[in-house]
Length: 98
Image (cartoon, rainbow, N blue to C red; front, top):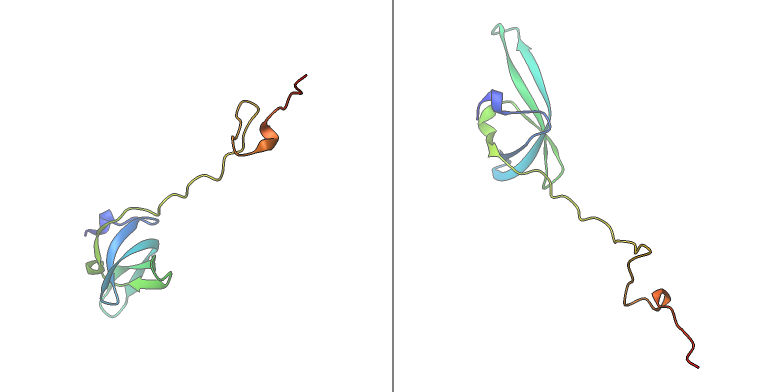
């Protein structure tokens, strides 16, 4: 992948400890190396399977884009005045038969 394709907060497939996994980029830092008079980017990522923080010093670890985390389903619905849950007897109105 190219440097322009990597964004902070993005989800990517990457090679971590010899295994392909999903990671999220937490930060991109610029490191200046005085000995060679130039700098390079360092990527702080989180492995989403193990939740471990890792630092990539090269773009070669990134394999491609990945989907973000799955969204959680909404909580249980509460019945409003119009809705009646057939399994709850408290919702029924009982009338006396004469």
